[in-house]
Image (cartoon, rainbow, N blue to C red; front, side):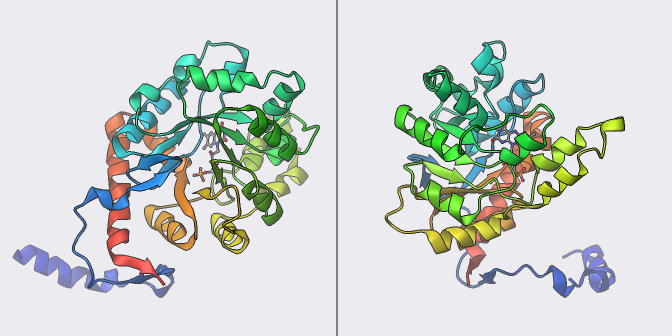
Length: 332
Ligand SMILES: Cc1cc2nc3c(=O)[nH]c(=O)nc-3n(C[C@H](O)[C@H](O)[C@H](O)COP(=O)(O)O)c2cc1C
């Protein structure tokens, strides 16, 4: 060890004492049982009938804008290289025409990893009424995707000046899709999660997975308020309060553990919404008593907007942290 390093240690020791409030709890630290991880295969798991090389899902984000093509291309490359799944952002533009098809056409970059298309429950309801639900299967087929995500967002739609109104309970529209589609279906929220009744009603359906989209991260009810500018700003303040309700990922893990039974038709979960770090991800994965991966949206976004190498480095570090946690942190 160099003299400089020894000197640094002495000088910096007093400033490097962690405060007790930063102690991360939720797992037992077991430093004796394993070597430093070198085997990348340790994180492998089956999910949605495919092999994930790390238990991470890139949650639905973008499409239909100029930036989308770069972001989606980078995210798909990362999924191909690191063996993660990806949910596309809303494919609504493709219901109108094929102008933005290129933004979503990324399966060739991740041939072995699952890619799902994404449609809002409002569009699904319209398609059911128009007897043209086959359109979502056709789009999914043309993108060579492996399944379909339905996002359920009543608070976002209500808080959005140009938002849609649902004529029926979303559960009815979801059941219509399950009856007609030939694809695996995932249902998600967009940032406020599901309460126990909604969650259990989804667990009773033959869904491929339920994605939490829990409270604690990007929140579209608040985001719609932030879109109002100038004189309009603050006008919908009472509605804004609805942005502060919902269920966190941790609370939803507890719901699932309490509600789950082997008789449930849906047995897979994507824990997402406000998952802040790989350690946070690892803790949630350990706590859920079911087959699961963790979903991250905004955490990847800023790295996906630049060169692929920038995102690649971030995902590699994320994976390294998961490997370390897997070796030395055990369930309490
Ligand atoms: C820029 C952006 C766009 C999003 N677009 C969609 C979308 O089109 N469809 C959808 O189901 N969810 C969408 N979401 C919600 C995310 O999939 C996720 O549920 C939510 O952001 C919470 O995850 P996070 O805390 O990791 O960001 C979007 C999120 C972001 C940040």
